[in-house]
Length: 575
Image (tube, rainbow, N blue to C red):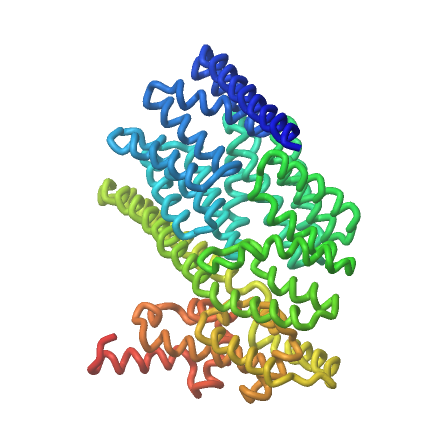
C-alpha cells in the first residue's frame, strides 16, 4: 500500500517537472519571434484554440517595447480575459493601458481602451450603466480623433444597451444604419462587420418572437444570420460560429422543431465549453430548458434553469433572462411539486420588483447622456455654420436648412418615443378587446378561487407596480403584467376587480392619468410639451385617446388643465 502511494507521488512530481520544462521550452522557443509575428500567431489561434493563443499573448506582453505595442498587447489581453478568463485580470490590463495613455495625445487608442473597459462591465459584470459611461467617453474620443471604425464600434455597443432594456425598435434602427455604413465595404474589417450582422439577426428574431404572424421578421433574421455565419466560417472564428449556431437552435425551438433545436444547442454548448466561452452558456441553457419544458421533460428543464438561476441572486445586475424563476416555477408545477412552484413564483415577484428601478435608470441615462446630447451637438454645429454666413439671401437658405434639420431631429426623437410607447395598445380604443380577453379568462377559470395568500402576494406586487413607472409602457397588457408578477391573468384580473373596484383597463388608465397630473403640476418643462407628447410619455397611443381619458377623469381636457395651471403659477406661485 505504502509503496503504491510512494510511486504515485514520484510519478506526479515527475509529470509536474516535465510540464514545467515543456512550458519553459515553449516560452524560450517563442522568445526569438518578433512582436509582429507573435501578434499574427495569436490572431490565428485566438478563436479556435484560446489556450494556445494565450501562450503567444503572454510572450507578446513580454516582447512589447514601444508604447503602441504595450497598449495594443494590453488591450488584446483584456479582450482575451473578457471572453475566456477573469474580470479582475481584464480590468487590470485595460487600466494599465489607460494609465499609459493618460499623458499621451492619442485619442484613438485611449478611446479604444475606454470602449474595451465598457465591454468588460457589459459582458462580464452586467453593469450596463457603468458600461455606458465608458462607451460615452470612447465615443467622444473617437469623434475628436475622427476615427470612423471606433465610432461604428461604440455606436454598436450603445445600440446593444437599448436592446438590453427591450427597446428593440431603437436598437434595430441603429443596427440597420450601421449595416448600411459597413455593407460591402472592403475597408471595414471582420471584427467590425460581424457584430452588426449578429445583432441584426438577433433583434429580428426577438421581434418575430413577439409577432409570430410576421414571417418576414424570421426571414430577415435568417438572412443576416446566414451572412454572419458565412463570414465566421471563412474566418474559422469558433466564438462567432458558436453564437450563430445558438441562434439557429433558438429559431428551431421557436418553430417547434425540438429535436433540431437540441442538436444545434448541444453543438453550441460543446464548442462554448471547449473554447472557454462562458458568457454564451446562459443563452444555451435557457433555450435548452425551454425545449425540455415544451416537451414536458421537466427534470431536464429544471436542471438547465437552475444553472441560470445563480445569476439572479445578485439583483444589482440585470440578467438577460429575468423570467428564469418564473420558468422554474412552471417546471416544478409540471412535476406537481406545488411547494417549490410557489417558492420560485415568489422569488420571481421579488426579483422583478427589485429590478424595476435598475431598468428604468438605464433608460433615463440613455436618454439624458446619449440621445439629447446628440441632438444638441447637431444643433450647435448648425448654429456655428449660421454664424459664418453673411446677411444675404444665402443666410435665409442656410436658416431654412437649419430649421428643417431641427424639425427632422425633433421628429426622429419623438418618433423614437412613439415607437417605444406605442407598440401594441391604444388604451381607449382597444378597451373592449382587452375586457373580452379578461372576461374569457374569467370564464375559463370561473371555478378557480384566489387564496388569501395569493391575493396578498399580488396586492404587494401591485403596490410595487404602482410606485414604478412600468404602467407607462404601452405593452403593459393584462397578460404582460401577469407574467411580470409571476401569476396568471385570471388571478390578477380578479384581484384588481375585487380590491381595486375596477377593471384592469380602468386601473391602468387611472394610473396613467394620475401620473400625467402629477407631472403637469410639478414639472414646468413637462407642461411645455404638446398634448401628443404628453400622451406618449404616459403610455397612450394617441393624443385623442389621452384627451378622452383625461376629460373622463378630471372633467376637462388636458389643454385647458395646462392653461389653468400656468395661470395659477403666473398669479403667485413658481414651480
